[in-house]
Length: 176
Image 1: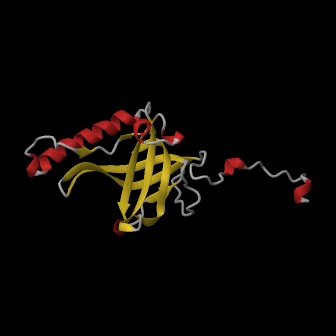
Image 2: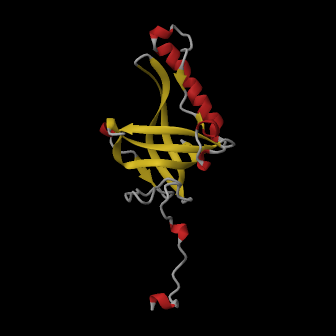
Image 3: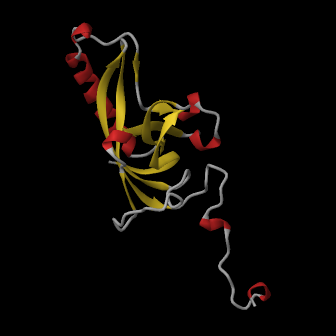
């Protein structure tokens, strides 16, 4: 469980292909503040899977691959968007044939409205790390198991959030 992360590129309710190609997947990008207590846990999980990777694939003969894909990436170094600054990011995905990930709120109630969980909201995300080899390339993948939305945040997709509105005043002439 990766706790207290900002969600981006939220695709939790309908599987989609990347640029119309490949298998359709459910996915979400986790924006993790660099000072988060989750970072050391994530790094330890990736290191454990990296050790498993070296043992799992005979071609490596127990050695480090020359090049491999680390799923924990540096937003300051790789992305221009302000939301990535001061953060690491991880892309987690789940194949359509595995079924949709569970999506719940802070009270463990299922969320079925796709507008409720959006790019910019915050939550806890259940993931699983796993080693892979594909066409001679090695890496650690991140499986998406479920998302718990914990709070609203400023939208990253240019849409409107509930925070953009004031409470309606029944004495306001507009509503009378």
